[in-house]
Length: 200
Image 1: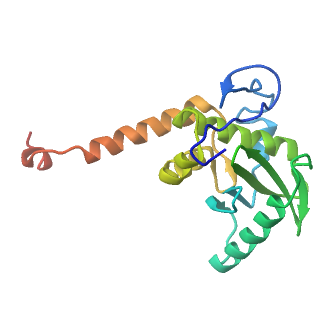
Image 2: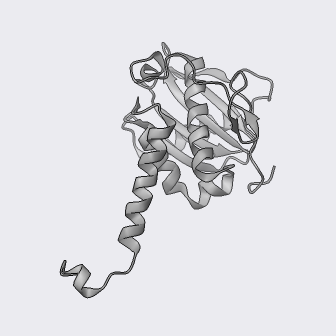
């Protein structure tokens, strides 16, 4: 698909909601705050989102390394993932980490986790983030990420911060984003001098 094409996400499991035109699995056991899924991001090292052409669209690092090293690791990992065949496993060992990735149309979502972490739960985490993007943008596509990258980062930060799950509830995350949008609209709306001085 071209970058502006409609993204179609494969289903994560059984029938349920529709996202990107495909069925989405029901919320798996362990998605609660104290569930298993809440533990999988404890040691997440980073997340990358890139296109089939190798263009980096989003990156979030949960480890302290230099910008030069980030670029080097990002290029190396993108080459490896893009060079893999479609039917190959979505997990691979890379350096001292495990890489879990999932392709949604023209975009690859890629996470680096530690060796003892669960790959299948990490796939669920990726899918949950994609669901959040789709709920916010409505049939999200690559152009949404390009022109609204700050929103994509904000959604990710509401979901995961410091490598740890903040909230697994889509409703809560989207509500926080909606409130932030309303605050931004209020800040950008023109006000009179008296309102600025608090006299109106």
